[in-house]
Structure formats: C-alpha cells, structure tokens
Length: 412
Image (cartoon, rainbow, N blue to C red; front, side, top):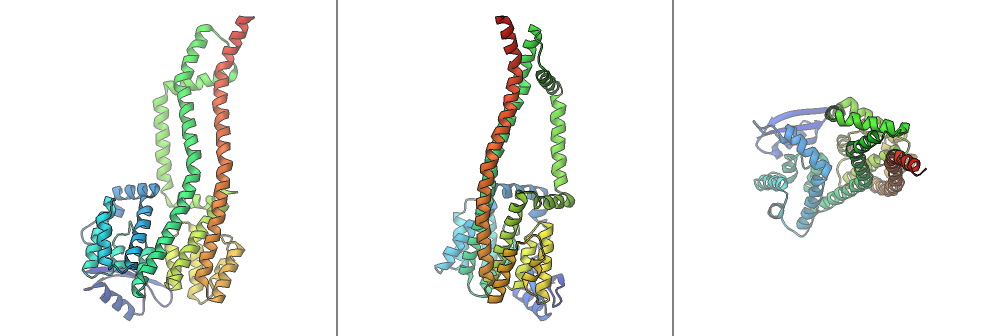
C-alpha cells in the first residue's frame, strides 16, 4: 500500500513523501528511524479523484457545513463511540452498530468503509484519515493518541465534549442572526410586492383623476415604473452582481480582507476575536490534556485556523515552543490576545496545568460571548423592526397622501 506522510524534523522543518509499505505500522517505524516527528499519515488512493476536490463535492460540503449536518453527525459519532467503547465494546463491533443504526446515507457509507478498514487491521485513526471530509486532523490526531495510550474511550469523550461545545457556539451565533435575517427577508418581500403590484395601480388612479402628487410620491412612482418596465434587466444585473460577489469572496485576497475587517469592527470585532480565541484555547487545551505533544497540538491548531492573523499568531507560538520559550511570550505581544488570557497561559505553564488553564479560559470566553451575542440580538432586532417600519410606513404615507388631499378638496 502507498501512504503519504507529513513530518517535522528536529529543526522544525516539514517533510512530505509517499512511501510504498506493507502496513501503516511499517511506515511509522521508517519515519521514526529517520528522526522525524509524524504529523499526518494518509493512504494514497489510485485513479480516484477525492470527492472533496470535485465541484459537486465542494458544493455539497459547503451546503452541509451551512446546515450543520456534518457537525451534528460528528457529535453523534463521538458520543456513541465513547459510550460503546467505554462499556467494553470493541472498535469493530461499535462501528458496525453505528453503521446499522445510521440514518444519514453519506455517513453510513463512510462508516462502512471505516469498519472494513479497521476489520482488516488498520488503526482507527488511519481509517478516519481516509475520510477528510468528515474527520479533521485534530479529531484523527486525538484518536491516534487515544489508541497509542490505550485510552480511546476517554479520548472519544473529550472529542464529544469538544464537538458539542463548538456546535453549541455555532448554533448560538446562527440563532441570534436568524430572526433579524427573517425580518429583513419578509420586509424586502413586502416592499417588492408594493413596488411591483400595488404602486402601479395607484399610478393609474392618480393619472385618471389628474391628482397632483408630492415629490416623494412622484419619485416612488418613477421607481415603480422603472422596475416594472426593466425588471428583467434589473433582476439579471442583481443576479450577476451576487454571482460576481460570491466568486470574489472565494479569492484569497477577499477572504483576507474580510478577515481583517471582521476583527476590527467596533462591537462585532471584539466578539469575532473572542470567538476565534476561545476555539483555539479549547482546541489546544483538549489536545494537551489528551497527551498530544505541545508542538503537534500547536501545529494542528494552526491548521484548523483560517484567519490569517491568527495563523500568524500560531506560527509565532510554534516558533516559540520550538525554541524552548513559553507560549505566553508569543501571546503577550499580540493585540489579538487579551492580557488576562496571556496571564492565564503563563500561570498554567508555570504550574504545569496548561491544559486546565486553556480550557478554563475557553469556558470563560464562551460564557462572555454568549452574553454578548444575546445582548447584540436584543439590540439589533428592534433596530431592524424600526428601520423596516419606517421604510414600509414611508411608502404607505407617500401613496395615501394624494388620496387624503383629494378627499379634503372634495369635502371643501
């Protein structure tokens, strides 16, 4: 079998090659003999394009990510595997049970492949690495650490807690944004119906009665006429702009620009920084608690981070750890990390309780984030209602003012 590996040498450099070996154990033995530190080991599949790089695979993965289905299935998998292995069930029977009771077709197929690989003697972590769309590097590395230390149930419990916490934070953010988005969508639909269907009828009425309309009503009638006549072109242009914006957002420069802006906004910037930092602290804390080497933990946290500035921060942390310096020295000089977090990391390193300190700070930041999200939601919802009420009310007043004037004149 052919296995691709990534490893680090004693100087902190990286090396990646493909080995032709009989088993994953033989590959790991060869890598250790060369004095390398293994960070990733995956099989090379011949004549098969990974689904994750196919266009339909990319679209499906992003859709599932938005809907949260993969994260939910990951939480269920880690919980059920922890429960079954914790009561003494073997890995192969546990995987078989999860496969037989699974309802998600994609996960059932993946579990079947994992079950077959493990049944043939492949370590569970190596089998999970063959499904990168479902299991990230952090998950696979912690499973590997659990297998190496004969503490797989404990490790799966920690992974379950980690996945559950991340899922809850994600749902909290989406839940806070959902109601304002629904309000905006409903208000936009109402305004569109008024402009395209209601206002043209009023325009015909005003022309028939030769009513002189105010300036605001005249502008509204012109806008309605323009959209009614050129609606197809306007809709096509709007669709083109949306597609162009979606393609632009996929570029590296646009993502970096949005990332730069997202952490510098007045209120939302603080929330974004705290959410990212809490996730990093939790990842590092859980991995260190699982006896994953600190350097490997930092490297995995680096790979799990997409924000450029936080990747640069984790690179500085990795360099400091490689040179034998405390993590706090790299964190202390960054505007991305509050002084309280830096001091907590320093205290944890000095007392030998780094994992506990990182998890405690992640819990503390998540609690603060939950309160901030709730406060922002309570503030933003009435603002949206007020804005949309003003828009709809302004349209209604502009339409009915000429009718009131006409009725007043008739009464006089």
